[in-house]
Image 1 (cartoon, rainbow, N blue to C red):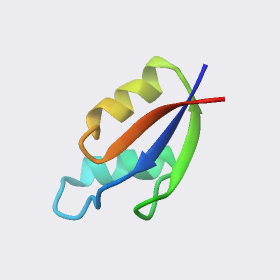
Image 2: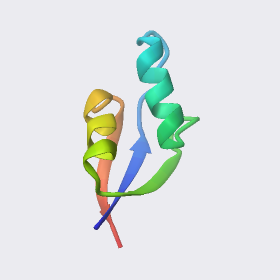
Image 3: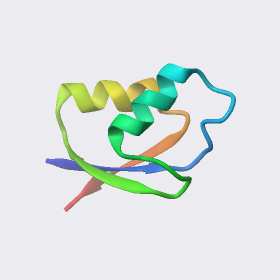
Image 4: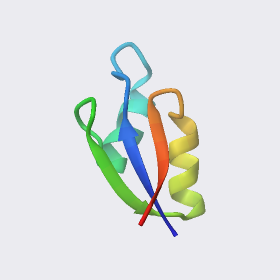
Amino acid sequence: MKVKVTLTKSPIGYSKAQHKVLQALGLGKVGSSAIHEDTPGILGMVHKCMHLVTVTQAQ
């Protein structure tokens, strides 16, 4: 299964670790999206910055 991760809030003012997680997910600007496999590593990264992103199921 795949998930679509969309950056919905700016990471300005949050920790550098969260900036790096978003960069690793392939999210740069607000509104950008990336599709990833539903693996424990990806879900852990999403959980770390859940307040900045929205997650939907991708086809």
